[in-house]
Amino acid sequence: MIDNDLLMKIDKDSEEPIYRQLIRHIKGQIESGALGPGVRLPASRDLAQLLNISRISVVNAYAELRATGYLSARAGRGTFVNGAIDSGTPLLSTNGMRHNGNGQADKLQVYAPNDRSLRELMRVACKPGVINFSQGAPPLEFFPVHHLREAINFTLDRDGSKALAYEAPEGYYPLRVAVQQYVSALGIRCSAEQVLITGGTQQALDLVMQTVLSEGDILVTESPTYLGVIDLARTRRQQILSVPIDEDGIRLDILENYLLDHPIRMIYVMPNFQNPTGTITPLHRRRQLLALAHHYSVPVLEDGVYQELRFEGEALPPLKALDEYGIVLHASGFTKNLMPGMRIGYVIANNAYYERLVRVKAIADISSPGLNQRAIHLLLERGVLARQLERNNRELRRRRDVALVAAKRHLPKGTTWNIPSGGLYLWIKLPEDGPSAAELYISAVEAGVAYAIGSVFYPDGEGNYHLRMNFGAHKPQDIEEGFRRLGNAWRDLAQDYAGMEKAHLL
Image 1: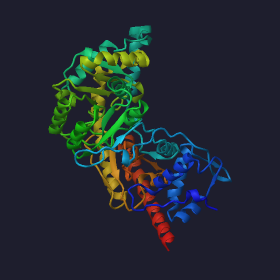
Image 2: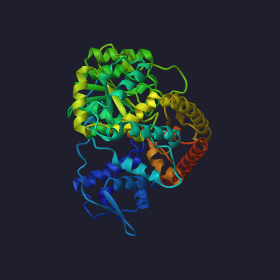
Image 3: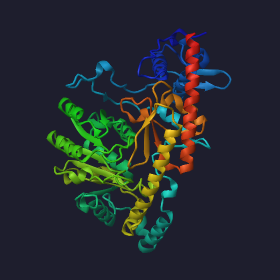
Image 4: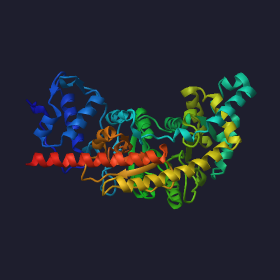
Protein backbone atom coordinates (compact mmCIF):
# COMPACT_ATOMS: atom_id res chain seq x y z
CA MET A 1 0.00 0.00 0.00
CA ILE A 2 1.30 3.45 -0.93
CA ASP A 3 1.63 5.95 1.93
CA ASN A 4 -0.54 9.03 1.27
CA ASP A 5 2.43 11.23 2.20
CA LEU A 6 4.13 10.09 -1.01
CA LEU A 7 1.25 11.21 -3.21
CA MET A 8 2.24 14.37 -5.03
CA LYS A 9 1.47 16.25 -8.21
CA ILE A 10 4.25 15.92 -10.77
CA ASP A 11 4.67 18.89 -13.08
CA LYS A 12 5.93 17.36 -16.33
CA ASP A 13 6.19 20.79 -17.96
CA SER A 14 8.49 22.14 -15.27
CA GLU A 15 12.17 22.86 -15.96
CA GLU A 16 12.89 20.95 -12.75
CA PRO A 17 13.49 17.27 -13.65
CA ILE A 18 10.88 14.83 -12.39
CA TYR A 19 13.36 12.97 -10.18
CA ARG A 20 14.36 16.27 -8.52
CA GLN A 21 10.71 17.05 -7.81
CA LEU A 22 10.39 13.64 -6.19
CA ILE A 23 13.54 14.14 -4.12
CA ARG A 24 12.29 17.53 -2.93
CA HIS A 25 8.93 16.09 -1.92
CA ILE A 26 10.33 13.06 -0.05
CA LYS A 27 12.93 15.21 1.74
CA GLY A 28 10.20 17.58 2.84
CA GLN A 29 8.06 14.74 4.16
CA ILE A 30 10.99 13.28 6.10
CA GLU A 31 12.14 16.62 7.53
CA SER A 32 8.59 17.53 8.57
CA GLY A 33 8.14 14.17 10.31
CA ALA A 34 5.32 13.03 8.02
CA LEU A 35 7.54 10.10 6.99
CA GLY A 36 9.09 8.84 10.21
CA PRO A 37 12.17 6.68 10.78
CA GLY A 38 11.70 3.09 9.71
CA VAL A 39 8.88 3.74 7.26
CA ARG A 40 9.16 1.42 4.27
CA LEU A 41 8.87 3.14 0.90
CA PRO A 42 7.12 1.47 -2.03
CA ALA A 43 9.08 -0.32 -4.72
CA SER A 44 10.26 1.97 -7.50
CA ARG A 45 7.99 0.30 -10.05
CA ASP A 46 4.91 0.71 -7.82
CA LEU A 47 5.56 4.37 -7.06
CA ALA A 48 6.27 5.10 -10.73
CA GLN A 49 2.96 3.58 -11.77
CA LEU A 50 1.05 5.46 -9.08
CA LEU A 51 2.57 8.84 -10.01
CA ASN A 52 2.43 8.10 -13.75
CA ILE A 53 6.16 8.73 -14.23
CA SER A 54 9.06 6.66 -15.51
CA ARG A 55 10.62 4.17 -13.17
CA ILE A 56 14.13 5.58 -13.82
CA SER A 57 13.04 8.85 -12.18
CA VAL A 58 12.10 6.97 -8.99
CA VAL A 59 15.28 4.84 -9.13
CA ASN A 60 17.47 7.95 -9.40
CA ALA A 61 15.56 9.77 -6.66
CA TYR A 62 15.92 6.84 -4.27
CA ALA A 63 19.64 6.52 -5.12
CA GLU A 64 20.34 10.16 -4.32
CA LEU A 65 18.30 10.07 -1.11
CA ARG A 66 20.27 7.01 0.00
CA ALA A 67 23.54 8.76 -0.84
CA THR A 68 22.62 11.72 1.38
CA GLY A 69 21.46 9.57 4.28
CA TYR A 70 17.72 10.13 4.06
CA LEU A 71 17.01 6.55 3.02
CA SER A 72 18.65 3.18 3.43
CA ALA A 73 18.29 -0.03 1.43
CA ARG A 74 18.00 -3.36 3.25
CA ALA A 75 18.76 -6.43 1.18
CA GLY A 76 15.63 -8.39 0.39
CA ARG A 77 13.38 -6.05 2.37
CA GLY A 78 13.23 -2.75 0.49
CA THR A 79 13.95 0.97 1.03
CA PHE A 80 13.39 2.61 4.43
CA VAL A 81 13.46 6.12 5.92
CA ASN A 82 16.49 6.78 8.12
CA GLY A 83 14.99 9.81 9.84
CA ALA A 84 15.02 13.58 9.67
CA ILE A 85 18.28 15.21 8.63
CA ASP A 86 19.34 18.78 9.23
CA SER A 87 19.96 19.86 5.67
CA GLY A 88 21.36 23.27 6.62
CA THR A 89 19.93 26.59 5.57
CA PRO A 90 18.17 26.13 2.23
CA LEU A 91 18.46 28.19 -0.89
CA LEU A 92 16.39 31.31 -0.97
CA SER A 93 13.03 30.52 -2.49
CA THR A 94 11.55 32.53 -5.33
CA ASN A 95 9.80 34.64 -2.71
CA GLY A 96 13.14 35.34 -1.08
CA MET A 97 14.93 36.43 -4.23
CA ARG A 98 15.83 40.02 -4.80
CA HIS A 99 15.15 41.59 -8.16
CA ASN A 100 17.46 43.52 -10.43
CA GLY A 101 16.66 46.51 -12.58
CA ASN A 102 15.41 44.32 -15.42
CA GLY A 103 12.75 42.76 -13.24
CA GLN A 104 14.64 39.46 -13.15
CA ALA A 105 15.17 37.54 -9.94
CA ASP A 106 18.75 37.63 -8.66
CA LYS A 107 20.03 34.11 -8.12
CA LEU A 108 21.48 34.64 -4.65
CA GLN A 109 22.49 31.44 -2.91
CA VAL A 110 22.82 31.50 0.86
CA TYR A 111 24.76 28.92 2.88
CA ALA A 112 23.68 26.01 0.70
CA PRO A 113 25.23 22.62 1.47
CA ASN A 114 27.06 20.72 -1.25
CA ASP A 115 24.84 18.78 -3.60
CA ARG A 116 26.16 15.62 -1.99
CA SER A 117 23.64 13.42 -3.72
CA LEU A 118 25.05 14.12 -7.17
CA ARG A 119 28.60 13.79 -5.86
CA GLU A 120 27.80 10.39 -4.41
CA LEU A 121 26.14 9.46 -7.68
CA MET A 122 29.31 10.31 -9.60
CA ARG A 123 31.48 8.15 -7.35
CA VAL A 124 30.18 5.01 -9.01
CA ALA A 125 32.36 6.02 -11.97
CA CYS A 126 35.23 4.27 -10.16
CA LYS A 127 33.90 0.88 -11.22
CA PRO A 128 36.43 -1.20 -13.23
CA GLY A 129 36.05 -0.88 -16.97
CA VAL A 130 34.32 2.52 -16.89
CA ILE A 131 35.79 5.16 -19.23
CA ASN A 132 35.65 8.11 -16.87
CA PHE A 133 35.37 11.56 -18.48
CA SER A 134 34.40 13.27 -15.21
CA GLN A 135 37.89 14.04 -13.97
CA GLY A 136 39.43 17.51 -13.91
CA ALA A 137 43.05 16.44 -14.43
CA PRO A 138 45.30 15.73 -17.41
CA PRO A 139 46.27 12.10 -18.11
CA LEU A 140 49.08 10.34 -16.30
CA GLU A 141 51.11 9.93 -19.49
CA PHE A 142 51.48 13.73 -19.68
CA PHE A 143 53.56 13.89 -16.49
CA PRO A 144 57.38 14.27 -16.86
CA VAL A 145 58.19 11.63 -14.26
CA HIS A 146 61.82 11.10 -15.26
CA HIS A 147 62.53 14.85 -15.18
CA LEU A 148 60.96 15.06 -11.73
CA ARG A 149 63.04 12.13 -10.48
CA GLU A 150 66.21 13.87 -11.64
CA ALA A 151 65.13 17.16 -10.08
CA ILE A 152 64.34 15.56 -6.71
CA ASN A 153 67.62 13.63 -6.63
CA PHE A 154 69.58 16.73 -7.60
CA THR A 155 67.81 18.79 -4.93
CA LEU A 156 68.49 16.26 -2.18
CA ASP A 157 72.15 15.94 -3.21
CA ARG A 158 72.55 19.73 -3.32
CA ASP A 159 70.48 20.84 -0.32
CA GLY A 160 70.35 17.78 1.92
CA SER A 161 68.08 18.17 4.94
CA LYS A 162 67.35 21.82 4.04
CA ALA A 163 65.04 20.54 1.32
CA LEU A 164 62.94 18.76 3.95
CA ALA A 165 62.67 21.65 6.41
CA TYR A 166 59.97 24.32 6.62
CA GLU A 167 60.16 27.08 4.03
CA ALA A 168 59.03 30.64 4.63
CA PRO A 169 55.23 30.98 4.40
CA GLU A 170 55.71 33.10 1.28
CA GLY A 171 57.50 30.22 -0.41
CA TYR A 172 60.99 29.21 -1.54
CA TYR A 173 62.43 32.48 -2.75
CA PRO A 174 64.15 31.19 -5.93
CA LEU A 175 60.80 29.65 -6.96
CA ARG A 176 59.05 32.99 -6.37
CA VAL A 177 61.62 34.63 -8.64
CA ALA A 178 61.11 31.90 -11.26
CA VAL A 179 57.32 32.40 -11.13
CA GLN A 180 57.76 36.16 -11.50
CA GLN A 181 59.90 35.59 -14.59
CA TYR A 182 57.50 32.95 -15.87
CA VAL A 183 54.39 35.14 -15.69
CA SER A 184 56.24 38.09 -17.20
CA ALA A 185 56.09 36.15 -20.48
CA LEU A 186 52.30 36.28 -20.14
CA GLY A 187 52.42 40.06 -19.73
CA ILE A 188 52.07 40.17 -15.93
CA ARG A 189 54.37 42.73 -14.35
CA CYS A 190 55.12 42.03 -10.71
CA SER A 191 57.98 41.51 -8.29
CA ALA A 192 58.95 38.27 -6.59
CA GLU A 193 57.77 39.91 -3.36
CA GLN A 194 54.22 39.87 -4.76
CA VAL A 195 54.29 36.11 -5.42
CA LEU A 196 52.92 33.74 -2.77
CA ILE A 197 53.53 30.01 -3.27
CA THR A 198 50.54 27.83 -2.37
CA GLY A 199 49.49 24.21 -2.16
CA GLY A 200 48.06 24.13 -5.69
CA THR A 201 45.62 26.52 -7.34
CA GLN A 202 42.78 25.31 -5.12
CA GLN A 203 44.56 26.57 -2.01
CA ALA A 204 45.40 29.79 -3.84
CA LEU A 205 41.69 30.39 -4.42
CA ASP A 206 40.85 29.46 -0.83
CA LEU A 207 43.45 31.82 0.64
CA VAL A 208 42.14 34.72 -1.42
CA MET A 209 38.54 33.99 -0.46
CA GLN A 210 39.48 33.78 3.22
CA THR A 211 41.47 37.00 2.98
CA VAL A 212 38.96 39.15 1.08
CA LEU A 213 35.63 37.67 2.20
CA SER A 214 34.02 37.20 5.59
CA GLU A 215 31.15 34.91 6.51
CA GLY A 216 27.99 36.13 4.80
CA ASP A 217 29.81 38.26 2.19
CA ILE A 218 28.72 38.04 -1.44
CA LEU A 219 30.95 36.51 -4.10
CA VAL A 220 29.97 36.89 -7.76
CA THR A 221 30.73 33.93 -10.00
CA GLU A 222 30.02 33.02 -13.58
CA SER A 223 27.17 30.58 -14.13
CA PRO A 224 28.17 27.83 -14.70
CA THR A 225 31.47 28.02 -12.86
CA TYR A 226 34.26 25.96 -11.35
CA LEU A 227 32.85 23.49 -8.83
CA GLY A 228 35.74 24.02 -6.41
CA VAL A 229 34.85 27.68 -5.88
CA ILE A 230 31.22 26.78 -5.16
CA ASP A 231 32.47 24.31 -2.54
CA LEU A 232 34.84 26.86 -0.99
CA ALA A 233 32.14 29.51 -0.70
CA ARG A 234 29.73 27.06 0.89
CA THR A 235 32.36 25.80 3.33
CA ARG A 236 33.24 29.39 4.34
CA ARG A 237 29.52 30.23 4.57
CA GLN A 238 29.80 32.93 1.93
CA GLN A 239 26.99 33.86 -0.43
CA ILE A 240 27.18 33.28 -4.18
CA LEU A 241 25.52 35.54 -6.73
CA SER A 242 25.73 33.85 -10.13
CA VAL A 243 25.90 35.77 -13.40
CA PRO A 244 25.12 33.97 -16.67
CA ILE A 245 27.79 33.73 -19.34
CA ASP A 246 27.44 33.99 -23.10
CA GLU A 247 29.90 33.11 -25.86
CA ASP A 248 32.19 35.94 -24.65
CA GLY A 249 32.16 35.16 -20.95
CA ILE A 250 30.45 36.82 -18.01
CA ARG A 251 27.47 39.07 -18.88
CA LEU A 252 28.58 42.56 -17.88
CA ASP A 253 25.09 44.09 -18.18
CA ILE A 254 23.74 41.71 -15.56
CA LEU A 255 26.89 42.07 -13.47
CA GLU A 256 26.50 45.85 -13.31
CA ASN A 257 22.89 45.52 -12.18
CA TYR A 258 24.07 43.23 -9.38
CA LEU A 259 26.83 45.67 -8.43
CA LEU A 260 24.23 48.40 -8.14
CA ASP A 261 21.84 46.32 -6.04
CA HIS A 262 24.13 44.26 -3.77
CA PRO A 263 27.16 44.84 -1.51
CA ILE A 264 29.39 42.56 -3.58
CA ARG A 265 32.84 41.95 -2.08
CA MET A 266 34.61 40.07 -4.89
CA ILE A 267 34.19 38.79 -8.46
CA TYR A 268 35.56 35.38 -9.48
CA VAL A 269 36.19 34.67 -13.17
CA MET A 270 38.13 32.27 -15.38
CA PRO A 271 38.70 34.24 -18.62
CA ASN A 272 40.72 31.58 -20.44
CA PHE A 273 39.13 28.21 -21.35
CA GLN A 274 36.60 28.51 -18.58
CA ASN A 275 35.74 25.40 -16.59
CA PRO A 276 33.33 23.84 -17.53
CA THR A 277 32.34 25.63 -20.76
CA GLY A 278 35.71 26.33 -22.40
CA THR A 279 34.66 29.95 -23.04
CA ILE A 280 37.30 32.59 -23.79
CA THR A 281 36.64 36.18 -22.75
CA PRO A 282 37.76 38.51 -25.59
CA LEU A 283 40.10 41.40 -24.98
CA HIS A 284 37.48 44.15 -25.10
CA ARG A 285 35.31 42.46 -22.49
CA ARG A 286 38.32 41.88 -20.24
CA ARG A 287 39.00 45.60 -20.26
CA GLN A 288 35.35 46.40 -19.67
CA LEU A 289 35.21 44.00 -16.73
CA LEU A 290 38.24 45.63 -15.11
CA ALA A 291 36.82 49.12 -15.64
CA LEU A 292 33.51 48.04 -14.12
CA ALA A 293 35.16 46.40 -11.11
CA HIS A 294 37.33 49.49 -10.57
CA HIS A 295 34.32 51.81 -10.77
CA TYR A 296 32.56 49.89 -8.01
CA SER A 297 35.78 49.22 -6.04
CA VAL A 298 35.38 45.44 -6.15
CA PRO A 299 38.47 43.19 -6.40
CA VAL A 300 38.62 40.46 -9.05
CA LEU A 301 39.90 36.94 -8.39
CA GLU A 302 41.28 35.59 -11.67
CA ASP A 303 41.70 31.83 -12.06
CA GLY A 304 44.39 31.29 -14.69
CA VAL A 305 45.00 27.57 -14.28
CA TYR A 306 44.03 26.73 -17.90
CA GLN A 307 45.70 29.85 -19.38
CA GLU A 308 48.39 27.94 -21.25
CA LEU A 309 46.47 24.86 -22.34
CA ARG A 310 45.88 26.54 -25.71
CA PHE A 311 46.19 24.53 -28.90
CA GLU A 312 44.82 27.02 -31.43
CA GLY A 313 43.82 30.66 -31.68
CA GLU A 314 45.40 33.85 -30.41
CA ALA A 315 46.93 34.01 -26.94
CA LEU A 316 45.17 36.65 -24.85
CA PRO A 317 46.73 38.36 -21.83
CA PRO A 318 45.48 37.48 -18.35
CA LEU A 319 43.38 40.06 -16.55
CA LYS A 320 46.33 40.72 -14.26
CA ALA A 321 48.40 41.80 -17.27
CA LEU A 322 45.73 44.42 -18.09
CA ASP A 323 45.23 45.54 -14.49
CA GLU A 324 45.97 49.26 -14.20
CA TYR A 325 44.16 49.60 -10.90
CA GLY A 326 45.72 46.93 -8.69
CA ILE A 327 42.37 45.15 -8.21
CA VAL A 328 43.18 41.70 -9.68
CA LEU A 329 44.40 38.81 -7.57
CA HIS A 330 45.80 36.23 -9.99
CA ALA A 331 45.69 32.56 -8.93
CA SER A 332 47.27 29.77 -10.94
CA GLY A 333 49.67 26.88 -10.63
CA PHE A 334 51.42 23.93 -12.20
CA THR A 335 48.69 21.38 -11.51
CA LYS A 336 47.16 21.18 -15.00
CA ASN A 337 50.28 21.65 -17.09
CA LEU A 338 52.90 19.73 -15.09
CA MET A 339 51.95 17.46 -12.17
CA PRO A 340 48.78 17.77 -10.09
CA GLY A 341 50.14 15.72 -7.20
CA MET A 342 53.02 18.11 -6.55
CA ARG A 343 50.46 20.68 -5.35
CA ILE A 344 52.37 23.84 -6.27
CA GLY A 345 50.38 26.94 -7.14
CA TYR A 346 50.72 30.66 -6.59
CA VAL A 347 48.90 33.92 -6.00
CA ILE A 348 50.05 37.24 -7.39
CA ALA A 349 48.67 40.13 -5.36
CA ASN A 350 49.47 43.77 -4.77
CA ASN A 351 50.70 44.95 -1.38
CA ALA A 352 47.20 45.82 -0.11
CA TYR A 353 46.35 42.10 0.04
CA TYR A 354 49.71 40.36 0.10
CA GLU A 355 50.56 40.60 3.80
CA ARG A 356 47.12 39.35 4.82
CA LEU A 357 47.43 36.45 2.37
CA VAL A 358 50.77 35.46 3.91
CA ARG A 359 49.27 35.48 7.41
CA VAL A 360 46.36 33.28 6.31
CA LYS A 361 48.77 30.93 4.52
CA ALA A 362 50.98 30.61 7.61
CA ILE A 363 47.96 29.69 9.73
CA ALA A 364 46.67 27.23 7.13
CA ASP A 365 49.76 25.02 6.76
CA ILE A 366 52.90 26.97 7.78
CA SER A 367 54.38 26.48 4.29
CA SER A 368 54.08 24.37 1.16
CA PRO A 369 56.47 21.36 1.05
CA GLY A 370 60.01 22.59 0.46
CA LEU A 371 61.16 19.59 -1.57
CA ASN A 372 58.27 20.02 -4.00
CA GLN A 373 58.94 23.74 -4.35
CA ARG A 374 62.63 23.23 -5.03
CA ALA A 375 61.96 20.46 -7.55
CA ILE A 376 59.43 22.59 -9.46
CA HIS A 377 61.95 25.45 -9.42
CA LEU A 378 64.51 23.21 -11.11
CA LEU A 379 61.98 22.08 -13.72
CA LEU A 380 61.20 25.71 -14.56
CA GLU A 381 64.89 26.62 -14.75
CA ARG A 382 65.62 23.68 -17.04
CA GLY A 383 62.78 24.56 -19.43
CA VAL A 384 60.87 21.32 -18.78
CA LEU A 385 57.52 23.09 -18.43
CA ALA A 386 57.85 24.88 -21.77
CA ARG A 387 58.65 21.62 -23.57
CA GLN A 388 55.84 19.80 -21.78
CA LEU A 389 53.31 22.45 -22.77
CA GLU A 390 54.25 22.26 -26.43
CA ARG A 391 53.95 18.47 -26.50
CA ASN A 392 50.83 18.28 -24.36
CA ASN A 393 48.96 20.95 -26.32
CA ARG A 394 49.61 19.13 -29.60
CA GLU A 395 48.16 15.98 -28.09
CA LEU A 396 45.22 17.84 -26.54
CA ARG A 397 44.29 19.23 -29.94
CA ARG A 398 44.41 15.74 -31.44
CA ARG A 399 42.17 14.38 -28.69
CA ARG A 400 39.81 17.34 -29.02
CA ASP A 401 39.41 16.62 -32.71
CA VAL A 402 38.70 12.94 -32.02
CA ALA A 403 36.09 13.94 -29.42
CA LEU A 404 34.34 16.31 -31.84
CA VAL A 405 34.09 13.62 -34.50
CA ALA A 406 32.91 11.05 -31.95
CA ALA A 407 30.27 13.44 -30.57
CA LYS A 408 28.89 14.04 -34.04
CA ARG A 409 28.89 10.33 -34.84
CA HIS A 410 27.45 8.90 -31.63
CA LEU A 411 25.48 11.47 -29.65
CA PRO A 412 21.73 11.80 -30.29
CA LYS A 413 20.25 14.28 -32.74
CA GLY A 414 19.68 17.62 -31.09
CA THR A 415 22.77 17.41 -28.87
CA THR A 416 24.98 20.52 -28.93
CA TRP A 417 28.52 21.14 -27.69
CA ASN A 418 31.28 23.74 -27.64
CA ILE A 419 34.37 23.63 -29.87
CA PRO A 420 37.16 24.54 -27.46
CA SER A 421 40.46 26.03 -28.61
CA GLY A 422 42.12 25.06 -25.35
CA GLY A 423 41.57 23.45 -21.99
CA LEU A 424 40.41 19.91 -21.34
CA TYR A 425 36.64 19.82 -21.75
CA LEU A 426 33.68 19.48 -24.05
CA TRP A 427 30.56 21.13 -22.61
CA ILE A 428 27.60 19.18 -23.96
CA LYS A 429 23.86 19.80 -23.84
CA LEU A 430 21.57 16.81 -24.33
CA PRO A 431 18.19 17.08 -26.10
CA GLU A 432 15.49 18.18 -23.67
CA ASP A 433 12.98 15.64 -25.02
CA GLY A 434 14.93 12.82 -23.38
CA PRO A 435 16.51 12.01 -20.01
CA SER A 436 18.47 14.67 -18.16
CA ALA A 437 22.19 14.27 -17.44
CA ALA A 438 21.49 13.06 -13.90
CA GLU A 439 18.76 10.65 -15.05
CA LEU A 440 21.12 9.23 -17.68
CA TYR A 441 24.08 8.86 -15.35
CA ILE A 442 23.41 5.45 -13.81
CA SER A 443 22.56 3.94 -17.20
CA ALA A 444 25.73 5.46 -18.66
CA VAL A 445 27.92 3.98 -15.93
CA GLU A 446 26.28 0.60 -16.43
CA ALA A 447 27.16 0.97 -20.12
CA GLY A 448 30.79 1.70 -19.13
CA VAL A 449 31.12 5.49 -19.40
CA ALA A 450 30.98 8.36 -16.90
CA TYR A 451 30.94 12.16 -17.08
CA ALA A 452 30.52 15.18 -14.83
CA ILE A 453 26.84 16.04 -14.33
CA GLY A 454 26.36 19.61 -15.51
CA SER A 455 24.12 20.90 -12.73
CA VAL A 456 26.92 20.67 -10.13
CA PHE A 457 28.64 23.58 -11.90
CA TYR A 458 25.65 25.89 -11.43
CA PRO A 459 25.40 27.63 -8.05
CA ASP A 460 21.63 27.86 -8.57
CA GLY A 461 21.11 24.23 -9.65
CA GLU A 462 20.43 24.80 -13.35
CA GLY A 463 22.02 22.91 -16.24
CA ASN A 464 19.92 19.75 -15.95
CA TYR A 465 20.69 18.64 -19.51
CA HIS A 466 24.36 19.62 -19.52
CA LEU A 467 27.39 17.42 -18.94
CA ARG A 468 31.15 17.93 -19.05
CA MET A 469 33.50 15.51 -20.79
CA ASN A 470 37.27 15.64 -20.20
CA PHE A 471 38.56 14.62 -23.62
CA GLY A 472 42.14 15.31 -22.52
CA ALA A 473 42.12 12.48 -19.99
CA HIS A 474 41.88 9.63 -22.52
CA LYS A 475 43.62 8.24 -25.57
CA PRO A 476 41.82 8.57 -28.92
CA GLN A 477 40.55 4.98 -29.02
CA ASP A 478 39.01 5.34 -25.56
CA ILE A 479 37.42 8.67 -26.49
CA GLU A 480 35.73 7.06 -29.49
CA GLU A 481 34.53 4.09 -27.46
CA GLY A 482 33.36 6.27 -24.57
CA PHE A 483 31.22 8.46 -26.79
CA ARG A 484 29.79 5.37 -28.47
CA ARG A 485 28.77 3.96 -25.09
CA LEU A 486 27.27 7.29 -24.05
CA GLY A 487 25.18 7.60 -27.20
CA ASN A 488 23.91 4.05 -26.86
CA ALA A 489 23.04 4.57 -23.19
CA TRP A 490 21.04 7.71 -24.02
CA ARG A 491 19.13 6.01 -26.83
CA ASP A 492 18.33 2.95 -24.73
CA LEU A 493 17.11 5.04 -21.81
CA ALA A 494 15.22 7.48 -24.01
CA GLN A 495 13.41 4.56 -25.65
CA ASP A 496 12.55 3.01 -22.28
CA TYR A 497 11.53 6.40 -20.93
CA ALA A 498 9.22 7.11 -23.86
CA GLY A 499 7.76 3.61 -23.70
CA MET A 500 7.04 3.83 -20.00
CA GLU A 501 5.52 7.28 -20.30
CA LYS A 502 3.31 6.06 -23.15
CA ALA A 503 2.22 3.02 -21.14
CA HIS A 504 1.32 5.23 -18.17
CA LEU A 505 -0.85 7.44 -20.37
CA LEU A 506 -2.85 4.53 -21.76
